[in-house]
Length: 149
Image (tube, rainbow, N blue to C red):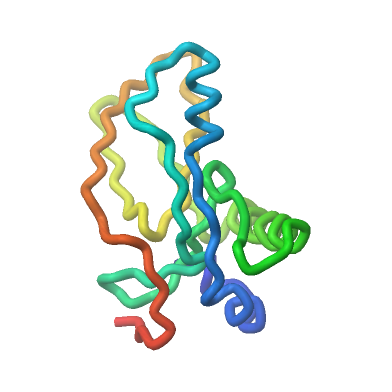
């Protein structure tokens, strides 16, 4: 949410209401090429670029380089440029990043609706064992009338 808030007002206005295609097809193809088990057919969805958090009413960026293919309302070149700018904004915005150092029995919980997360492999040569629990959530939406609570 902070990453969205730190965009300039014209950029926030420009991207609000746009939608993007999110796909798991490349990840499934890469896994299949390695002989890994594909647990379910890969899917594509159209989601808002900016989503409204259903509890707080705040807006958050809802794009990521692993799954976001392109912004529907823009040309391919425009979509690529805007997505590149948003990814750079998030990854270089150190003022809204958190680093978690894993220790024995550590637990990390975050709200996937408004958090970018990326595993850094800084625990080598040790091992990391994780169990992921993902609750069922709502379909991402953008509400232009939402007021932050």
